[in-house]
Image (cartoon, rainbow, N blue to C red):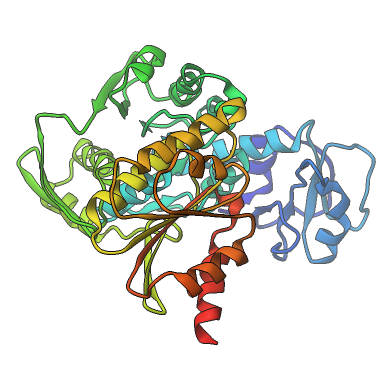
Length: 444
């Protein structure tokens, strides 16, 4: 999205330190690697960098000018220099201005697990009738949200924002600058409990999405005591669950589910009850926005899992299910239940560490091992120091490794080729390395 210089100054409340040319419209860029000619560069600060150090580079690449929170002129060659007290706040203010200028229906999605899948399903449904713009991949913090809002086109009708957090007040900030019309709290689990200490605090943090939710909007949320106790939103709230009388699950298979919701048949081309739950949010939002149920069903059927989220491929005779984008106790439980209850034949689960669980990390990993004991005929491979606790409570044949390459070598040398293998771990474990290594070993 491009703006006039007057719009940028007004939106960010900047002080103009220099302006020798304001003709035309400008995009605001935070990355010198992708900056375009005539952009206005906005330097952000991170834990290990300060964007102010790259101002000269931005101008050399053709930027018209830059923002700064330091009044000393750093690059006299720039045609425009704008001073703000905090460049991140300026970025948020510009995003809010863009949100109001385009004025799409804004849908905010948060949750301990499944928020990306839910966002993608909502998009798959609404794209049947609306021009939709959505958060890419894991752009779910304040910077990612700004990038998403500012990259929408002027004809955007629906803006879907994924909202993540690691602590209190983070989702509140995202809500403050995005003004959602519809909010979704997919669930509340143990993710980030190492920081927030209790699941009650996690529920409160997730409910911050309603901080600036439109008074005449709607909140869709998991029907849980935690969320109900934490929810302070005074507007319409719809609680969803798999026990709703409107829902009837007709068929469960590894590849798809079939169900009826409010008299309409749906086919979801991915297995697992947790995915049906995510689909319910998309269906209800489609209905809320006046869509025909048949159109909604088309969108649900069109949904396809994205990379590392129940991504299925064949490698060297193995059926690989890569669900390693992230992991917490709830998503681990959902993945194991789906895989072990729906898949037949030879099965192996490759499990890695779940991060950010604090002092209870050992307990949560041991619980995963106990869950495995409810099922028959499965072999277990663990990778990582925390994942070893899964092996401690697991009664199935189990081998433990510290490195991904060791695990890949073991799989190729010891696991029969007609085996289905589930990979599940937190993103930091980089389980895609194992799958790539298996591919390489199979070529030899």
